[in-house]
Length: 260
Image (cartoon, rainbow, N blue to C red; front, top):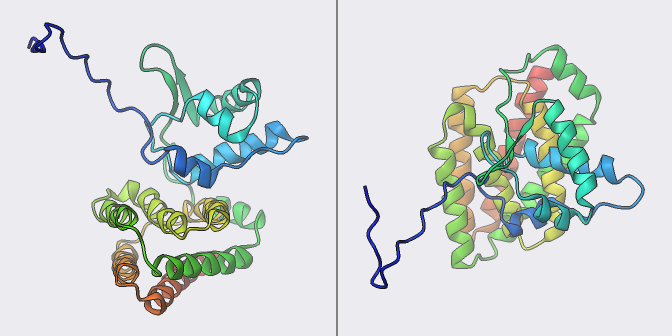
């Protein structure tokens, strides 16, 4: 079909396909990525880009922010960033595409992780109880702060994030769940809280990826999500904190069950 001409005789430019990762705008990047310190530039950059992937801020098939944008947020050279991206390509986590709509794209994870040996290996690398306690403190704090009152734009973001979890396919549920919780952390008004929550959640996701998705648990989790959001929007800080605490305890119990 031929595109219609404007009044001045020109044709509107063809719309570019939306290939960028959802939710990776400047504000979200600023809450997740931090300037890399001198001395371990490559290692710290790799850690933070992996965190970006583990949080699901860019879905499988989505495009990472441009090299220029990532380098600016991390305050590193593009040479260092390219070295990191090369490692991720070799590990089959991303791929580079050339052309007008090119860039670095996130690849789907290969299959479901075996929840036995791999889970034990990951558990050995972290202090699980410390991670779960710190997560609970950050989550309940964020819920209480958000309940102090959100601007209309923030309330809309929160509703949209909740809606995305309701409509998520089973294989995409944990990513959308992460984005909902990260949205609460970002809307808390504390950049430090949001950054620390992102780091804790990335660690938690490493463990959650090793255990099965249980439909009954997800249904219960969704009811808790809705209750937290309702309490936040009603400005009921006590209810928001208590419901979030209960929600965190449920996740902790599930993980402990599979760890036993």
